[in-house]
Image: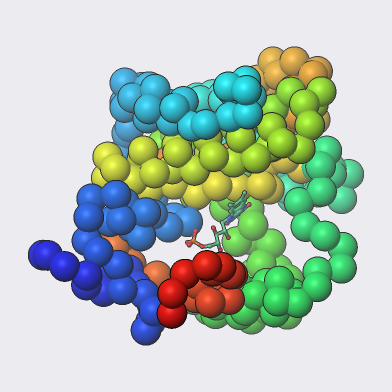
Length: 242
Ligand SMILES: Cc1cc2nc3c(=O)[nH]c(=O)nc-3n(C[C@H](O)[C@H](O)[C@H](O)COP(=O)(O)O)c2cc1C
């Protein structure tokens, strides 16, 4: 294919992107919540991390740390977190706040739309708390992925370093997509840091930020579920000719 064409995963009018390799990887990544159990070799994850480490970071401080879990180690984490989710979820809280308590618009509207689309796609009524809880539980099995990452950051660092960490996390997911693998970033793991810490020997100064499931997607190129605001909603161009 040549020239600008609608991305295979596109959603609408403004969604025309050139089919360059980098664009295909960016547009082809999605939050995958159903994986095949085909194993991903350690070597592949090493390659992903080796390229992801070229993420930029202020003063090149590279504030990321990753625990890479597979096999019995991953299963131990899953078992412990599923148990906590079932029996003691209210006793656990993340060490950082992901969402503002009062989301202003347009973010509130987008979150509501996310809920409609996400639970709608799963056939779960938004008021069905039991079914929602069962869906949340799937996070802790890494959605069936063969590899789970737990991402941490040194708590002594400032918010700027979290910006760097986000870039690293995105690089990991794009590097995976470039190898035909999909991923899901998962903040929900942060809630269970008290369980993860002893299981993975996470030092006290490290804060659990998120997990990332990595593996081969069950459905390789699904129709993109989550839309994006078009650029006129988030970009202000100054100094260009119209
Ligand atoms: C930092 C971060 C944390 C997230 N945490 C979760 C999570 O805990 N569970 C989950 O199912 N999805 C999680 N997501 C996935 C988002 O819901 C998803 O990226 C968003 O709805 C857009 O969909 P897309 O990535 O498929 O385009 C997270 C995404 C990010 C960036």
